[in-house]
Image 1 (spheres, rainbow, N blue to C red):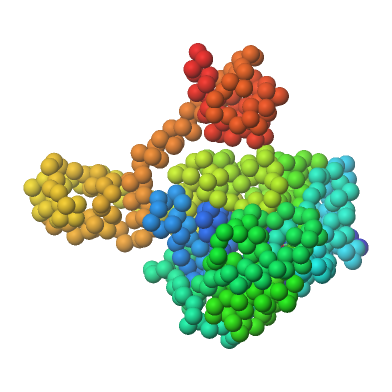
Image 2: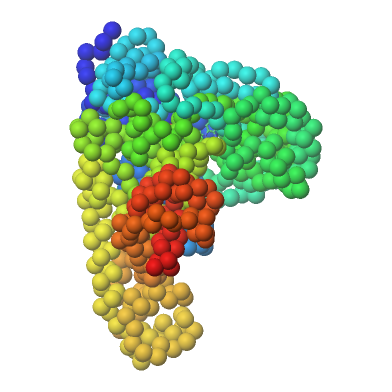
Length: 624
Ligand code: FAD
């Protein structure tokens, strides 16, 4: 049957990409249908119940800054929060939250159900309606035909999914869910380049069978960090500790003795797995000289005894998994509640996508999430938001939007994917961003919320909170620059105590804040100064970071401006790229093949990075 109502946007798949896509499209006023296998699994975490971490929390905060759900759901579901790299510079600092998977899922579902313009329907999509190389709608596996202007496909690991436990295989999208085979076949018949990837998950353990006295406790941070710009500690449920255990030589012996029963090592699995999140058999095999690996024992929630042993993802047979787990100190009597497994699935070469995440072959069809070769909830959510936004803009006949590499990690993620493609599951790292001093997790709102408001993604409540914060930062920054500390004043004496030497001249408070020995809090209670400091932590943090890193930030911004100014610079016909020092051979070859006429054209060639463009610019200037 033809469904009687027509939609602007249809999103297929209610995972992390699909839920952000559907919410973004609906927030922009588009009538949106979220079509998913099972309403009970909306926002389900297939693997680790944790959000954020290095490079990833940057994406969560960007999603949040653009009005998305992931940050707030984390604050509503997070049971342990920590700041990673707290002692390092702000560019690489990252927030990580252990989530209660049931509470997280409930938070996402609540946001979806309460979102105006959004309709949810439970059924598997089996086919796309395509006419004249343009997608017109979706047909479910029972034959219901839904029509829309644009469609977002975000089916995760479900396309042609095969689950491996030892040498046993079964078809599935993840444990307990069916695969999407009809849709996978249909997509394989379209002109996309398709390949296989794999990922894995560890066995889960019953906490009642663990001896915690033998494990090292790892509590969350105090004060508890917050994920969303609209979040607060009051939103957090009860906080709990994680624990740390270790594999040992016995564990490694068991694994090595059973490698022939591993689907990865016996050649049964062909897909490539995530290099940065390897299985325990991979770690033991690749790092044979290491006699121990850390295992983080993480609670799955407040109302369950199940634990997630982070670090022993495996596809070894169940009997070996049990031996491996029980070889670990503290887990000698552990009961496994669910076996670990690996899953192989179809993904599409993201080089067949535009920056908007629209496919190059089928108009109005957008791909987001794990099907683009990424791994991780955060990477999926960020792409979902962008795809939902652009699907909605297409339905409204507006031009696509995407952030640049110097504006957002989301810009880096999409640019990397569509220009370089990927041979292994792609995850975000701060090292992927060349402008990471500008792209900090603390300033995602300052970078993106105004744009999000203009795009129709940011509601009044978020806009008001953001505008007040931005104004408070500006006022406080100006105030610190206008208050002087005289060298002979009592305030100077107090500062001298803190920095261990006297002030020899007058200083502005803003100058003092730049000193490494002083923090914003040190500027409170300076005698003789009417110096009431802001008690909003986020404002104080921003004022401090902007003051301390002003020089570096300006330098990085200068580089970006310089590149923009030189975009029209011509590249001589006789330029020998082999002689340009500092370029990789791959980039030299690409430039030699394409022979771009200007620097801007060179920058648009897939795989030519901003760093390479900078090198070219320096080379051209030397030639003059
Ligand atoms: P998913 O979250 O998989 O959501 C897909 C959604 O689409 C589901 O709701 C599904 O029901 C729905 N769907 C599928 N087909 C259809 C259809 N035909 N019609 C309607 N609905 C459909 N990430 C990490 O960062 N680290 C890890 O260690 C890690 N390990 C993993 C281990 C396993 C076993 C799995 C399965 C995933 C793992 N991941 C890991 C990946 C992480 O789960 C994904 O990156 C993330 O969930 C991707 O989000 P997504 O929205 O693209 O897809």
